[in-house]
Length: 225
Ligand SMILES: [Zn+2]
Ligand SMILES: [Zn+2]
Image (cartoon, rainbow, N blue to C red; front, side, top):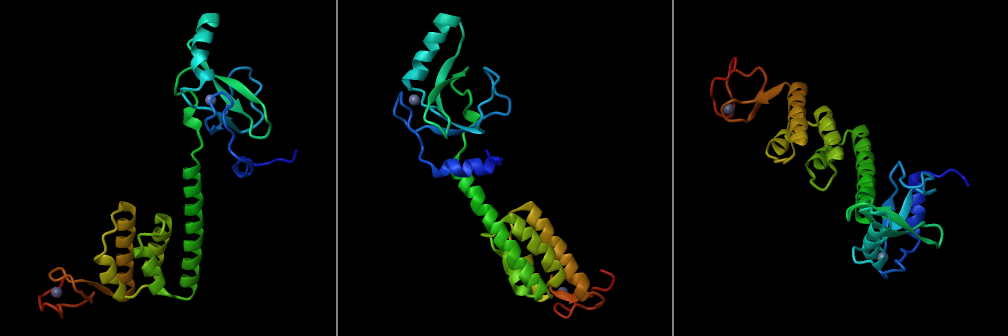
């Protein structure tokens, strides 16, 4: 068998139909096998198994009594199945929660995939905008709450390099609601001021020349402020 990454195996499994537990007829959960396998020490031969985590499953319910009577163990079985064959087997568990930590939530996986795509797309738009010095697009990405935070952080860095004083008000008046982004936006504002030899009037917050002595907006003395 050719070497496959865990992701490739998972992709293949997700294309197959979800099995139903033969003991209780409930849909089984996809479960990531822990790195150290318990029991016979042979390993499972697959990074993922289907497990019936139904607490009312007859196999699981009767397992507690069975193992207690025969082996004096507080344990039971859950029904498992290798995704790539048709045999159902039993896996020992030592608590109702046993093994549940590794259930692969397909919703989470799908969301991860969507996020990865959005980040890829965002970075590609930013790269194009940066090359063509399209500061409007870069500012728009920074302020767009639908863009992933990683994309907006990158946009903030580019805004500092590209944007003119026009962008200052937009960014200043924006509530980012995220400390990392807010800090990155402040950095961008400092960079825009430095590149344009401007600063904020300490009295009226309008943009003035760095070396201005009198604010042209509020007429106050800003020399040395
Ligand atoms: Zn079952
Ligand atoms: Zn002023």
